[in-house]
Length: 143
Ligand code: HEM
Image (cartoon, rainbow, N blue to C red; front, side):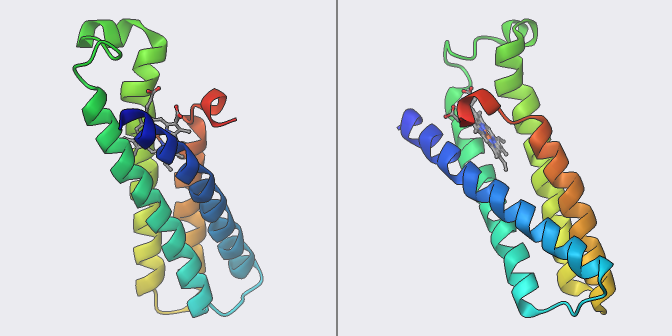
């Protein structure tokens, strides 16, 4: 079950990265070119946010299942071993922060009153969230 969830988490990672990137790019384009914020733009942001939330859900389950096993060791060992620290602390924390920013960006864009503000919120929050996510992905395991 643990391996299956890890596999699922890796598979959804591709979709999440592509969707977040596309939503961010489209918002930036809309903002810079003073386009109309359409329902399609909102939906792209929504799908990106949903994929990020799926990652959050499966990531938390993987984390909880892994804690206490010899794979992760005790807290002293976690802090000493950089690979374990990355898997148990750095990756989850940075991803939670990234997903939170994407959620804020989507909500602000949804509630925004004019197209420019809506595009700006989505572009800015998705950009920072995406950068945080990219900074702590286990790239070696993704490819
Ligand atoms: C967009 C968000 C995320 C992306 C793109 C992502 C990506 C990945 C990837 C590619 C792996 C390696 C999978 C494998 O070994 O086959 C991984 C592992 C893992 N992720 Fe995430 N993740 C995200 C969010 C999260 C969150 C929010 C948490 C927890 C709160 C989390 C917890 C974990 C854990 C515990 C592992 C296992 C690490 C290991 O055993 O080496 N992830 N993630």
